[in-house]
Length: 164
Image (tube, rainbow, N blue to C red):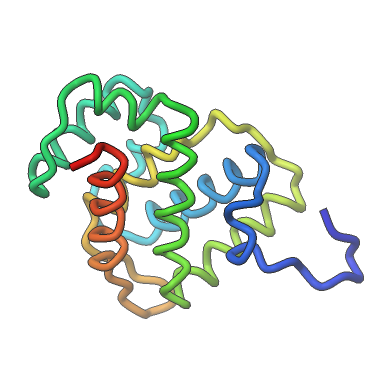
């Protein structure tokens, strides 16, 4: 963590280098920002969902998007540490391409850093992925932010990971 007098390090340029705790904190910040800024009822449920039901919902959501996965592949997407890390970094990188949401996520991340809230198990990469796949847009500071590009990018990443 930086001293108060130092400029914050660009979190988006360090995604591949974040340790597990930093990445978990950034995933939590991103998922919370998205869930808090949507009109979709029930979006916050993904933030507290255990891996097994998250895997089943992810399987169904991916099927709806034209990416068929079996139960084992769905479980891998939500439980395998290497896979979930890759998905988290990929989804975060896609979100970083949208300045409005990237700025809001960074503010939430910095606030979590100041509070020293680090719980790598609170919100999973699967929760962030589900939010990006299920929600079409969020409204941040009066600006509509669409997830079309992030959604397509996440689906492409999953296809590559699964060899499709």
